[in-house]
Picture 1 (cartoon, rainbow, N blue to C red):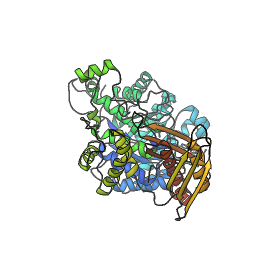
Picture 2 (tube, protein in one colour; picture 1 turned 90 degrees about the vertical axis):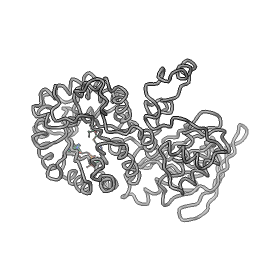
Picture 3 (cartoon, helix red, strand yellow; picture 1 turned 60 degrees about the vertical axis):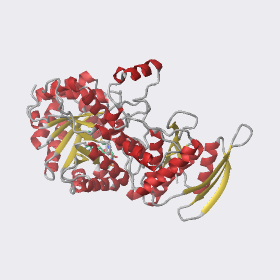
Picture 4 (cartoon, helix red, strand yellow; picture 1 turned 90 degrees about the horizontal axis):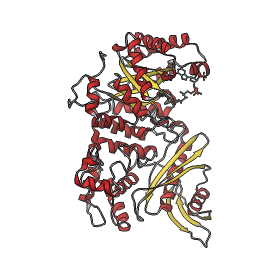
Length: 540
Ligand SMILES: CC(=O)SCCNC(=O)CCNC(=O)[C@H](O)C(C)(C)COP(=O)(O)OP(=O)(O)OC[C@H]1O[C@@H](n2cnc3c(N)ncnc32)[C@H](O)[C@@H]1OP(=O)(O)O
Ligand SMILES: CC(C)C(=O)C(=O)O
């Protein structure tokens, strides 16, 4: 089957900042979105869906500043989502104005269940709205993407009709969302094939797919869609997103890279062709993944494909033996391909700034002198307690020491905790309040962390609910750095914080203070900040 005007490689549409940000508790503020967008550009994504401009003043500001700073003529296309509603399209167009190349992505549901219960509209009404709103979006930008939401559960005949109408109205990309992650890969293939056979003008546009991960099939479905001629995939870093998330960018890209001979024929190329299948600079993957995890507070499971801590680790003897004899016995790709360093020199308390700087550079962190010095001092402190510093320790340190600074908030001055099996866990804590007061208090709790949190609550006086508390050991060993992630709830919003230390009670205190500071900042300027806010990881 010909793919007509479709691209000769897979266009990577990154929606980390829109659908990814819909992860409960994983939302981002403007500075954080901008920091991620600045990393998505060198990663080489073709399109950044920077947000949903109409959703909040914060999201509008984020789309606008990303359009200004990242949407340069050489940079990616900047996109905003919009419902098929004038007000949404106007907001998107306005926010996107500064971008050299911009796209409005408008969508409306097409499945019977959505029409009946959500939109309360008939098929003919939806058809008319789609045509009118695509034409309206076209009056602002040439590049208009249309998504029939819940496409995979839409009656095929109606779907074909909507798509034909959307293309006639001026859509330049047609995106097929498996909104509820319901498809199997075979069904996805049939769905795309059906569209390509029954929508007469489909070859005039780029065909795209958006796969959700409810059944853990998002990447498989995206790859199946590619086999059937889709030339744009919508995906997110680390696969984050609404509910179980989206297809992970790093999985799709590395599958296309590692299995190029398998995919080449679907692009009409000889099996052995070496032409790239995406524009992604894979060496930027690891760095991007860490940044997204850090700023969203969404930890990466150790066994996550490509970017998990265990993805390139070999635990068992037979595997280690094979790896020593010949790497490819148990590795289908090299860690360096995603930006991890090849030779891991051991850093410890005797290491100097140069080795430290070099290793950070290998890991993808280029720090200015101030940040480097801060991180180096912390590195020395931790190295005094730990024999060996792993790459993950270094990342935790850089994460803690170099993130975007909170302008105002509480600071933890001192913490002392007494616990054991014959005493009441007691925490004595001193904090500095945002207006400079130094306050000290002590409280008993059911355990050391409970005592710490109760004491901080008495001092800070900001009511909230602890929703999640998790500790992750950064590396193995008794002296490992522990990273604590905390999520707290306050009315509609969820705020999270993260911090690392060799003492997990200390890390817990800093993580909690970081989350509280997010909440505090939100309470100071609610209209400036998204309703559901995110973590902030800072250890003073
Ligand atoms: C599958 C996806 O990921 S879609 C993207 C989902 N992302 C988000 O929703 C995040 C941002 N959303 C928001 O901030 C808010 O929901 C807003 C600003 C968009 C809308 O807020 P509100 O005006 O208060 O509406 P609310 O969210 O309660 O309900 C959604 C409304 O949009 C309508 N709607 C939903 N999708 C569409 C669409 N594609 N086109 C037109 N109308 C739509 C619904 O029918 C409902 O209308 P109703 O109030 O007349 O029943
Ligand atoms: C807006 C669309 C593409 C979406 O996110 C979905 O349907 O899941």
